[in-house]
Amino acid sequence: MEFVICINNQNYTASLEVKKIYQVIPDKSASLHHMIRVIDESGEDYLYPQNYFMSVELSEAIIQAIATVN
Image (cartoon, rainbow, N blue to C red; front, side):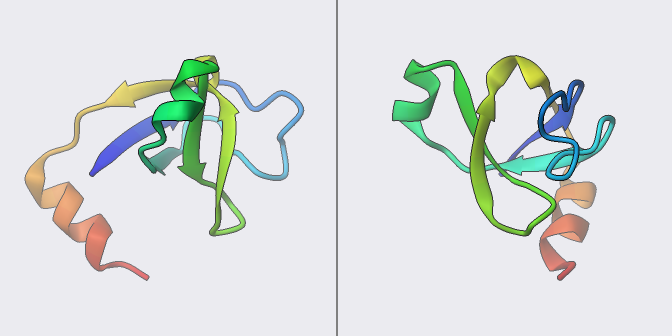
């Protein structure tokens, strides 16, 4: 599982929260266009500009805790 933290939500204030961690859904074609697919506040995955996020490394314990939360 890959995670990012939102650092900018301009034009997406209803969908993204700054300083919140989001799960990344791998999408090679999106990355070719400098976009990233994340599960946003709607609970669905959507494309956003890559530069709105920074990668974060989470411990295995945190990843497992996130994976079990619904």
